Length: 230
Image 1 (cartoon, helix red, strand yellow):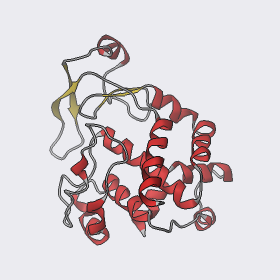
Image 2 (cartoon, rainbow, N blue to C red; image 1 turned 180 degrees about the horizontal axis):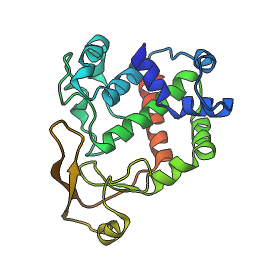
Image 3 (cartoon, rainbow, N blue to C red; image 1 turned 135 degrees about the horizontal axis):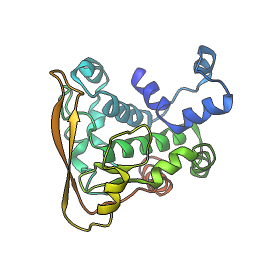
Image 4 (cartoon, helix red, strand yellow; image 1 turned 30 degrees about the vertical axis):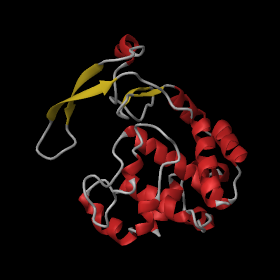
């Protein structure tokens, strides 16, 4: 199942495995040695993988093929105004522009839940998952510690080097980071769509906050364990 494999590869469990093998590339031998996910949590990995990857109509056939009405019963493991409870219940068998996760906050939460679901499926404990994160992913820790979200789930500032030009620059951020209310605007040149560059204005709504990955792991673990392991 390609969606399941994509979900597994998005997890830090898979990343950790490839790191400890000590190879520069994920060659066939490594790929063949990876475990397959099995059990009642796999459909949740598949759903989150689809919502993360099926960003355009080019993925419509894959999404439709993988769609299950079981998806409609799913929920976020974390309560936050930026994570709409109806997000899953509103899914339809046919792909639409609203099908995938598009806000930074939603997409991060989906990856958190994939990490937890993958760990639970493979028999990795919560403490082991957090230890893997602490020891093997110092760069990710530094990004998590200095990535800030607005009230609509946008990244307003990040030190993530792979997200160049996302959010405000450091000097601009220092001027607004303590704002409790207000809307702050940033104009960018968007050259990602056909037809040439277009100037866009992005709005960020205060106040701003960060996420705690280990706390979110604990919250998700408690949620899924209570709901599916009783």
